[in-house]
Image (cartoon, rainbow, N blue to C red):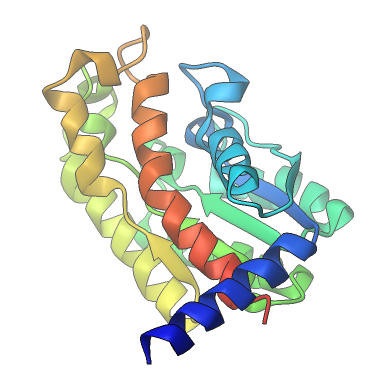
Length: 222
């Protein structure tokens, strides 16, 4: 049985390696890599890591912009997504909705709309990977954006929306919420602005995102 499973995995990896993967990453500051260089962003790291494993991936677009909400993403990033016609995509969005006081119902509507539009473009629905929102409240300057609210509770509620709506559509989710809390105790994980992740933190996110992405691409290529 072990030989059969191993054989299946090797076939899956071989098929994935033979296919050219066009990757588009949508999101905000966390996806563009604010606080680090473009090459240190987790989508860039993920692309390199996948290629090192023999999966031919090209990050064809990362139109993410610091400060953008899901409304901005719908209006300005999805057109890029449709134009590029990727066969693999990631989505990490919502933090700025919460910061700007967007209510949970509106966020759910916008997030669901984004996921549905992305799934319409992707030929294979299994090729979408969603990442939860990190807890920026643990950073030195994060509390400045609380406005009397609990950042941790607020982000957790938005992440529940993300998990629920993704599950309805059979889309894989990588949860970095708890991992991001390490920024509270390790200054090296926070960028110089005291708010965004450092290159080291983005690398830690990529370490948990990578195996799921590899598994997703390998399985869905059969």
